[in-house]
Amino acid sequence: MKPKIAFFDFASCEGCQLQVVNLEMEIPTLLELVDIVAFREAMTEASDDYAIAFVEGSITRESDIPRLKKIRERATVLVALGACASSGGLNALKNRMGMDTVKNIVYGDKAGRFETFPARPIHAVVPVDVHIPGCPIHKDEFLRVVQALLLGKKPEIPDYPVCVECKLKDNLCVYELGQKCLGPISRAGCGAWCPSNVDACAGCRGFISEPNKNAQTDIMKKYGLTPDMIMKEYRLFNAYTEDSNE
Image (cartoon, rainbow, N blue to C red; front, side):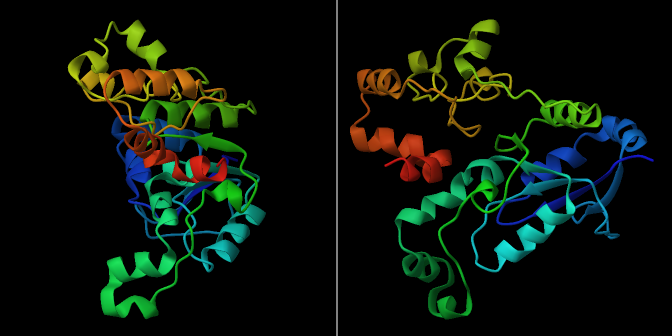
């Protein structure tokens, strides 16, 4: 029997699940290897019988917790899909503002009708077996992770900086184009997606395990960034991690 996989979402734009749908020509091959039993974005049928759960989105409400725990209980393998699930993503930016302030900004005079609490990645609530970082995820990396899981292997997620991939592609450093880039401390694996399209790396895949932030800060100061500007760059996709380390 083919392994059964399911997709779930919490607070997110669902762009990472869309990347799975965007596999297009690879989808028939994928369906030869697995049975997708739940995927709200792509199908109406749903089943609670699955071995591998892919979860997109951060946890932003108390009511999210029991739902996530049920998913974890049913899944043999739980995969954090994308930046929001893996690191808290952009959603964690609200954590420094105060929850009442956030609700009033978003909902105005209807704020009292909605619940919220500081956003967090799913590993802050339940154990996670595999992280697929990125905003959005990279389709090829998703396929590599699925392949590894089906073979009973631990998926290999790069732990070296985006700058390595830029060098391999002979990219002109975007700092020389007047941009501010987190490539020296951000996790590779996207093929230097943004710098290859003349855009700076914003760190959406999280930081490498031993980032040299002192050197990164020195680079950014050299190119005119103030300490406040530097911290805004660090926190854009990694606010939960940065604030937890303070």
